[in-house]
Length: 222
Image (cartoon, rainbow, N blue to C red; front, side, top):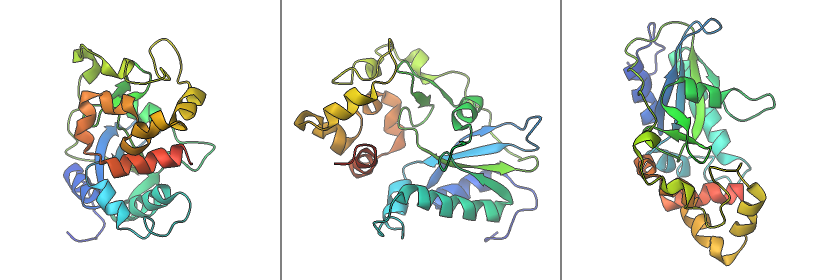
């Protein structure tokens, strides 16, 4: 099929092209009154880090490399598939990615308040979306329930060393940054947020420590 635009988009081809580019399909939002076709949510999966770190954006030392990579790659997919690209950054105003994620039937609010996904757990990283102007055939049925329902231990609630994320309060960003600035915060800085790692489903993201360290450095620069 090459790079020719599709006359009738097929979900399996969208997924194949996304995975070849280093992305995964993280859900679809059904067509609605203001959307003639579905929205396909794309995110970082097991192939993302290799694709990114060998890309021009991964080596040019310019600001916002992951966002710039996402724009280039997802815009190219949109051109090939005759879709419109959307991104969760670049605002305000911002696209309603959280609402889209919940509407996809594959992401829910976790006990900590963060979104949890059916295959990547708390390691959610939406990089963009493709909005189609008409029907997309072969879209699989969404999951029925959050993985948190069957998670008896709920390790995410006790994983944060300074209780910056908990069921009884909003995310305490200052406490998180203060902890990351200490020697005790090195584990989170080099391996990723302890809360995100504690989720059993997060293992499905296939995220390497190097990838987590990159995102943590962006969140908490030295």
